Amino acid sequence: MSFFLHGDLKEDVYMVAPPGFTSIPQEKLMALYGLKQACREWFAKLSSFLLSMGYTQSMNDHSLFINYSEGSFTALLVYVDDIILAGNDKEEIARIKQALNQIFKIKDFGNLRYFLGLEVARSKTGIMVNQRKYALELLTNASLLACKPAPTPIDNHEKFSSTGSVPFTDIQAYRILIGRLMYLTNTRPDITFSVQQLSQFLAKPTIGHYNAAIRILRYIKWAPSLGLFFSSTTSVHLKAFCDSDWGTCNDSRQSMTGFSVYLGNSLISWKSKKQGTISKSYCEAEYRAMTAVTCEIQWLTYLLQDFKVLF
Image 1 (spheres, rainbow, N blue to C red):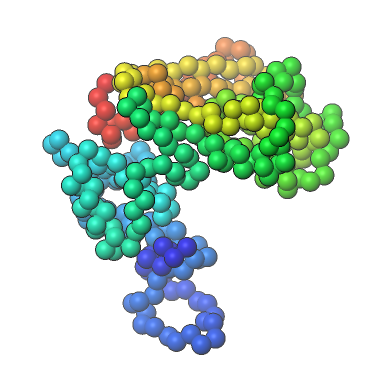
Image 2: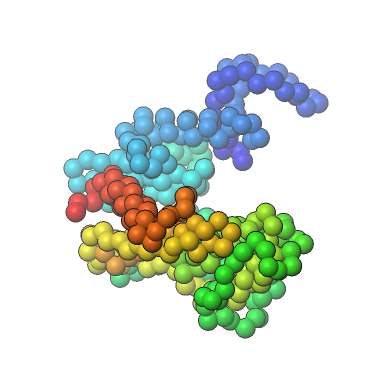
């Protein structure tokens, strides 16, 4: 977490110094890992530096910085201390990398191949993104690397409830497993609904819930390298699909919203979520689903405008 040391503290912090520590001038105090201000001060310093280099911070995604001029476009995406840099101007990319290295001492890993568990493969036809290594680690940790694959992630006839089965004693293990599966949904929309259903019972899981989670792992074993493909020849056209059920939650009688959004033929956004309030009719549940996907399309439209994508 040495990158936090680049952040400058703007307020007094009272702490006990370790033995042998010599005092330093107040103006030299830097952020330390573990302080609640550390993340904020680090990002504030990084963003102010990028703004001074001529980049503009996106109002639709504050971790996105853009440099645009006639015939030149560069985008910089930040996740804590990891950065993805893309664009069509090699000179600008070289300039910003050199400037970042002078201030923060960065490491250049070359073309994007692996980022936060996401594996990226590029070709003339498009970009493939999956989490094969992460999926295999999940199976290995659960001792299911040699298990028999399951054809589907969930039994369509099974209705989950907080009662009706023996409680699962190792609650922490269940929470860890569901959390890992939730991260896998970044490239596996096919398990999003199943994971959403099981994530509702983190407080009091049952044996049935745990067995359903193991079934998802067995389904992943069937195709661990499955992911998303973004075609280089797809049309620049947003299209969306949404659906809902009505009062299918056995505990709260709330409805479910599900939608997917495509840019051309490439899936770029999807969600499966329980609606916040109880719908009194099937029509009301459908309207709530359409409202959710409309908000998503509006946000994606703003984001694509930041990328100078014209419809």
